[in-house]
Length: 451
Image (tube, rainbow, N blue to C red):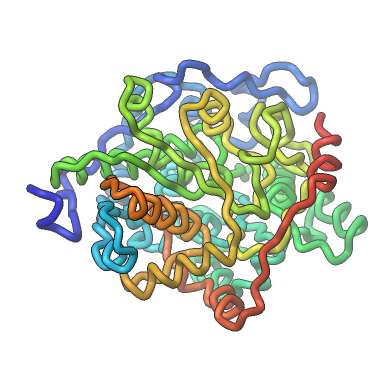
């Protein structure tokens, strides 16, 4: 079927992927081994058993190309998967571009974002390992919401440490988590030693994902019935998200299309990985496809960070990983894309970027919201601020093609809706929103504190 026939491409339920794709099987260079934060020696699975279940740790270290999705997980996936792929015809017309623009919409999930793709299997593996409770962190709230629902589905308790700036900006996201049965705590908090130290150092701290991770890990280490669950960065999280890219490939084949450019927003990396990783083998085989990760200029991890070993949290409780980082003590400004305010990046994404297999760009938040509103007014979906970074870059690429006359197939990930982000839209529409510039000296200071 030709691409000019359909605007909404629905994959039949029987085409739901039965396996996750593991990019480690095809990478020219695997990430350097993570280090134990105490001994500084290469990390072993046994080191992580106090906070992760065996099933997840097996996936973290695996180099098998395909890993089977458990039947129980696939059955829950069917509540919203396969998710639709749309052709953005009205946006194409508004831009007067010769490009064909598609977006993979993950906002159809029960929690309104892609995060449930990993929350369901993570809770499943913790359930069969006998755990009763999970602790986690969340930035904008999408991951906390996803884990809250997933734990409820499997009968586990859930405690979410929510970055304080998002806790205050997005009260209804907190409400949804509590509806699903989770306990939600603003981070930094007085609940943990890591939180108390940060509040003593800076009583007005707005928090960060690194700090919230520290609190959640400390919480898990303090109870035998509790494990920790992470919504991005780690290999197994990126693995779970690859259902997105696998479905996208099949949907494009239905309309005889192949992407010239794949674009995804990137904070910790799982959203970008989920869409882009299934196309990495094509890139390695010589296909002329660009895989573009988009980050906020207020937290430019790939574009201005260093590829070095660093802690993945503030309190130095988590493994030391080789990744692009701004330094664990970098406190991102209070930009509205809370889910992208992380000092580091996935070791897998980082290695692929270091090897030149993927690209990265950073965009300002006013330009992001300008693109989000243009998209909403033409396509009807109010996008999350995080997803809107991908929209901004997709629009920029389409405008370049308008100038050159080149027709390309552009695919971006619309990883969630923005129904709980209206305060951010209000700030933009009122003219109060400002762009954030990060002076070199701030990054230099943060990067001087690497382990």
